[in-house]
Image (cartoon, rainbow, N blue to C red; front, side, top):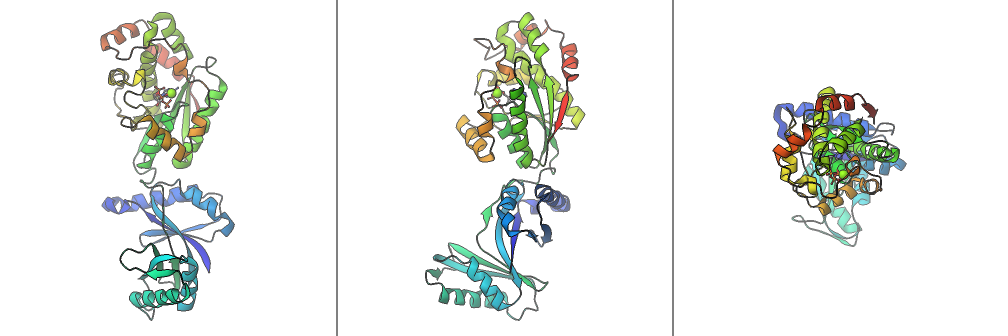
Length: 384
Ligand code: ATP
Ligand code: MG
């Protein structure tokens, strides 16, 4: 008797001709997540099976699989020879000690002497005789004991399926560039879009020496957690210190964040072109802070030439975002108190509803294209 993990995947069946492409990407992502851990992955009619792992590593494997998008549900089961005695012994281990249950059998091996109804009836009957606290409910059982008689002379026996990460395999829906700060929101935004199958690269802007090295390390720590879900990522790090100094020196201070945002978007679009990203992603949420009004977003959006900007958190409350960041494991890092560049030279009263003509008038005091090129020349790339 050997432990195995059975994996059911999501939505892939919806994709018609693309199914093969989605499945290959899904298998590559699982392999990548389990790199360095002994295992074998096998495809088996509409599911995947993980076998030949060390049983002590099962919780490590499960926690890694928990971060693979595309997994709908998964279950730890037992693999035995296709023999009623062995199947029963496994079923007894999988069956709960109390509550209602039923046995469900799938028989791929049509040469097996009993059909699926007979297998379910015999195994269910024996379980009922031997485990005192259980009763049968065929319509809405609390527990299902699944038996899968395969064509290769083995059978799988498994119980409860647990929920997987959901979503689509990363790499099946293009690539996006996440503007990542050290805050709570942007890692959650990246996670949400990756969940729909998009590969994610990151760009981070810092204002060293006004912001310190720990602030940069914090962002890399966040990106590292995100990379466990996104099958790796690259962080493009860019210094915007001089841009902020120039705004501070030449422009109305109330426009600091508004103008800086426009620079960030321009630079991000250039970085996206370099790394092949097809959209920008931000952690903005409508009305959350002064710069995230619709007028603020209009101002920063208007410098983008070609790409869509995805703002998956726009309709979320802060509490909902916090809950998600706790779930994905970024919250504790996000709340470390290192400053983001947006807090440097922060005015007492930033404009909340910038008018385009005023923004353009302030921006006209700057040599925008030179500042953009200069910032791009500071690019440093960290691969995670
Ligand atoms: P977050 O929690 O993601 O920092 P926030 O609520 O602090 O968001 P802002 O600081 O207004 O909001 O930033 C809005 C969005 O702009 C961020 O979610 C992020 O996508 C982007 N952004 C802000 N600062 C930076 C930065 N230093 N580098 C890259 N992107 C940034
Ligand atoms: Mg922030």
